[in-house]
Image (cartoon, rainbow, N blue to C red; front, side, top):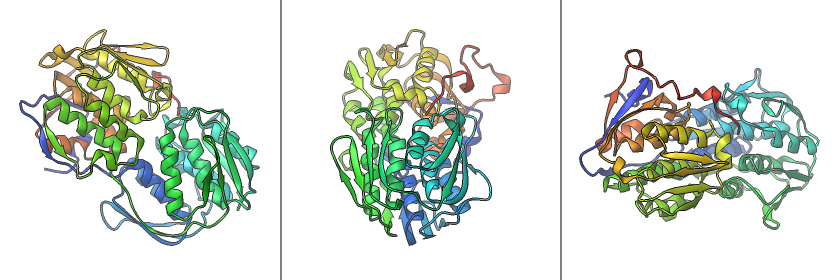
Length: 445
């Protein structure tokens, strides 16, 4: 059977398994860490080898962009990159196209500040609806010539081969990626850079910690100065061999499969060994079907779709708070989760301002519904709603190929565990009229 053959299917209907799912699964490498390591290796003089890496749409786009900026990026096997760099990036001949890869778009926008020449960072129609204004404002405050289209990509950076140090204040409320982007480029400045948040709030603070750990591994000197300020010393990154840990966000689906089917899946890594913030979701998943009545999701944002679908089968209602940033991901995930859950059963979920409430109903297990779930081109919506199909018949995922963004082998992994999936020909079926296309959902970061 061809690998990843389900990616080309227009839709997949999940058939609930009649047994516990068990087996050994190796999650893909972390997207977040892979893209950080790729950029820092490109900024180091010499050869770096990254192993255990994720090869998906987002990381492939990052590697392609680095090649366009004069960096040698080879892929000797399915989980490795070998990067040879002169410690500098060159202006590309054409705009950098980064699809809907948020990390690559934000990180390369900041890195372009050290380029001699003009760099245009652009993406697809979805990326052009994801805000980048706070990062552009921060770069301009550093004396960098950067501009965007109304606070959204494309972004044009006119670099002069370097920039001065000093103090920069940045609004990290919408996304920690803005902060990480400035942190990673800061060692290239002519002098020390003080980076301070304009407020105490920051989206997914744990990802800044990932950034700092990766920077230090590549030789950067970063000092924490209070809860919302860092001092980065100027200095060159050094080439290293770097191992990427498995993706904790991907692991959440596998942990959910265990509790939904009373199964046992060996990931080859303990939950406590992950350094990514989404790993904290394991403790909540383990409490199913007695999940907490309130789940604060700000520090494990990519795990919220998994938890929300799991909550559909919980013994009681669950309110998700601190998740406003989910409105500005690949799609408005709060709206997409509400819509999808209500396709399974009307009234299963609601929104109150930026909270999502899921009214758990264990009786959904064993029922048959006719629920076509629009993934809104969002990999996490597709993967999380597939979990509902393990308990309830009639769950169909539209655009299953969008999982290639971070977990290309997702459907093959389910199949290897014993899940049956049936391809659906949408030309001979109907698409629910009340499911809005992704372009009609509010969009952002």
